Image (cartoon, rainbow, N blue to C red):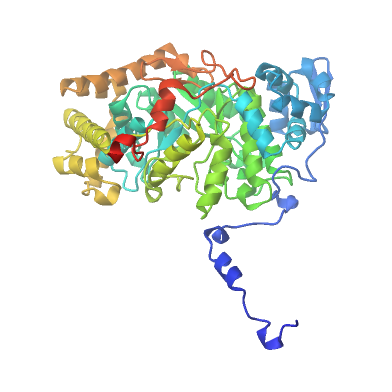
Length: 563
């Protein structure tokens, strides 16, 4: 039958309903290779090539040495093994892709192959893999056998009391790393101190960082108020690197500054950053990110935070973009680096879409599945909101239980959370009193114990707080002084945990690839917890006490409850 002219503008009710779905508030872009809006394979990506003469690489991905930009030169001189390159580059890319998913090909063999590949060769290999195959490869290639998780702990007022309480709850949930940043830059020392004390309240061994400009971040690490850093950004083209007044060599020098002072660090990069900075040279996002990964390897850092990070909206807007994000995580592990695999920026209005993206890292497992999960409400997350926040904790715990997969977290009960939030706030109150900082009132302690966000907190005197934060840097107040203050006020257990973290800085064991520190103050890394996955029955297996812990969510009922 024909549609009458007057009815031609009539809408389908089903399409009207669809248009109101959250996913249709997201942004989607047709592929646009000229400006880099292409995920994994641009017509402008170079063909793989390496030529070696007298032990030096003289051609890389179609460029002669005299045409190299600074990334080409750094990768050629510090990452690719010229003794292996020409023979490995002759290997069929499909054969290498099949080795990645073959359980009979061990991880170590793939790492040896990666030493001889150019960036374009890596991209060519990964384009042979679908999403499931990428996850299969990632399960085998991650460095540390045991997966883990990282969180954000921030608030819009930079309230140190609330931050300490939130950090204690996050540690109780099982986050092995905690990251904060600031709304007001001068609050940074208080945030670092609050995170340090709160994170060590419920258990020992939690690594903490305060994401800032690099000089202040390094200074806080030297004072022992933080224990790692990751917001040292690198980029995939020369122009974007120069926008930050940086080079691969300056970043490598900064990495050595952290390592020489016993602080763990990793670089940060991610697909889409060059698009945002209008410097893609027409290349695909994955090609540029592969250059970042290889630069990080050449610089000698132990790991990389990638997975698009704050640029996730860019790859998520183009076809195969979320697949590209998974591929960049895999690329990092192929070069034997720790991967903190993103999921740390909200990118979609759709809960279904956000969950689907997260499963790409949760199911195979990574060194840090989130980098990080917002342990506070997203409107309090000063990193602009995470893929999941404190309101999603129960969902995440149930997904672990549903799929028998370890996402690094564990169920907690309300009484326990209240207990440790209170203890963290009281401990910070004692340190502030001992060091002569502005008073933390009992009203603030109670509000932080039971509150959800900074709206629940009494206002602090910001001017006096900022004067006190300057004292930390000007007087060089250290983590040791915080520990001594805790001892004086009866918080010996928290003090000992902080002191143990300072001892780790001297020992240096946690500078190894993919290191975390357990509650016994023992370093667990790719050295003593190497991923040995070679198929069913091998690698990390969720069982025993850890499986019992994940199973026992507070919502479940037993037969006894039915009597």
